[in-house]
Length: 191
Image 1 (tube, rainbow, N blue to C red):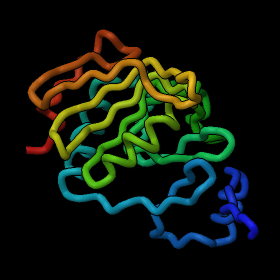
Image 2: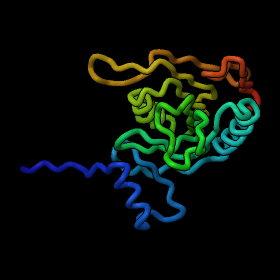
Image 3: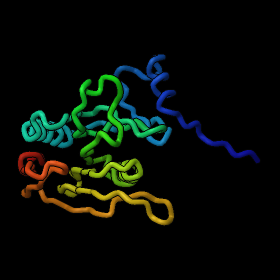
């Protein structure tokens, strides 16, 4: 009996597939651990939360950092996720030469309803392994914000975050790396 394994794509191969027109213009895909993953459609609460959060972050951050929405980040060499929002360091070319890598990322944010389990169980360890210091999940199922920080590797080799703090929709919190900037969650969570 022969065992087979699935082909894992590198980021370069994934880009080449895109150049060759393998993906349609409306295909919503991302590369996670070498696998091409179809992204789930966004529901109305997800879209509203993302829009409100984007507006608040732009107002708070001004020119202190870039806020990117649904744009790729590079996690060498087999992942190119597209988080809902990312706060990244300013660079001279505004990432024209390359997508942000983990060292550029100040905060990654996913907004989750139907994707909650995937964001918690697949993306969280991926981001922790990459050394991304702060990861937030706007959990629209339970209606609260999950804030993860301090990535670590367990003795068994699994990756995660040491700290998880929950914030309710009527609370406020400081943005990581910008301790003077306060995000009012009541202006972000839908209805």
